[in-house]
Image (cartoon, rainbow, N blue to C red; front, side):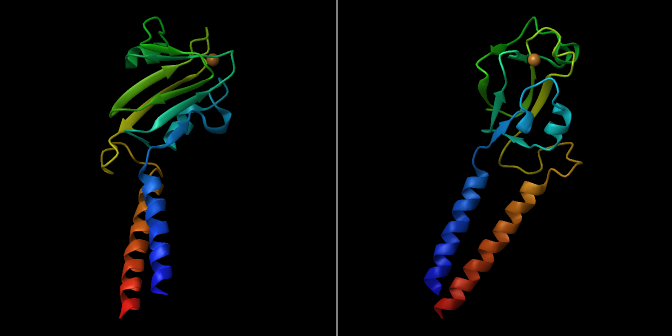
Length: 162
Ligand SMILES: [Cu+2]
């Protein structure tokens, strides 16, 4: 019985480690990078941590340009893009905390709402997100539940040995 608990414990630890590792965020969810996608509501359901990746999936009608400033983002000014991609399956690594701005490079699409603002928080702190008013804490509470489970299992396996 003690051995079973140890195996289970190892499994839980493996699950948590996986949870703490880098996450891939497909921009726009199942709808992908498209002018019909509501990127604001998609972003509000995501937590971007350092080490995570964005994946832009789209057809050849679109592209991805990264903008250098909030004002360029607001005005859809894509003339000074800091980066542009067009593979249709572009991966962007979020390697440091801060805000990054992405828009579609196709004429008119940014103005139609095809743009997204990504704020990355440092991965090891759960208090770094300044405006976490919505139900974005689900993954944090999941982690807590797993932690409680681990402690319970540890105690259970200890008790079984005596
Ligand atoms: Cu587009």
